Image (cartoon, rainbow, N blue to C red; front, side, top):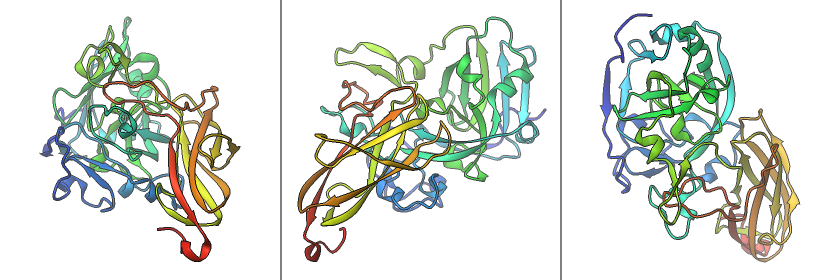
Length: 376
């Protein structure tokens, strides 16, 4: 459990404020599917159509969206270290080998950027104009954060755990102790059975299932136990809901119940007749209990069939048979979780465009079969 503190690192630079698609993908994105949508120099979105025909409930690593707030550090797994300090009985410096010797835990969980679907807000909210493309589902492997905290020994008065990212010194975010001690909050070094890829925080990241992605610190190099709510900018300014009057309403936490349709795609042209409606649903508040689909713009809904599920932290895949008649059709999906939360028709506007989970509507054109030629 000894060694250098942070490991040897270099950084693939990117301007986190640049909203212009780059002319090429940074070296850190090598191996990513070229069909992903670039947002600036450090972010990639997963077009929903790439999710329509997945063989598994999880999104392959090469198709998984990427969100980074700064440069991408390249940290060697062999020299990576995690420092644990603050209100602990024993300060620790752990290697990846140390973590992997602890009791492991694996779970399937969705991960959603706090600003996913921001482009749906009217008027436009500030920030990256994500479509419905900053969410994914993966099987994560690692060790419960609680196991590591128990090894260090928490002292009386512990309130929050501050995670330190290896991308830049200011990347720190506080996590309430009860959430940190949830067995599903992980120090993850594996994603879909592979070593955690560099763009997703490898060698080790924090994973806080159900919370906005900002809570799941990438390239984790430090944990500090403190006796108060953390007042750093990533808790008190960035990733905070502000209403139209500029009033701070609180930080991003659990993500609301949500669903999206991935097939057919919006503005597609379909042949009349039997057409499957396919999508995914998830919630930061618990397991998805029901998904409903409307083919008339929300006037009526019918219950869809959940065809794949993998525990309360995972999204579900739903399907609904639809006999499409010629004309314009407005398709919607609406999810309800086990806590009784139902996806709303609208949500209040907020200045940063966080937490968009209102019902999504897509429009399609249905034509006679001899004119439709399937989809286009």
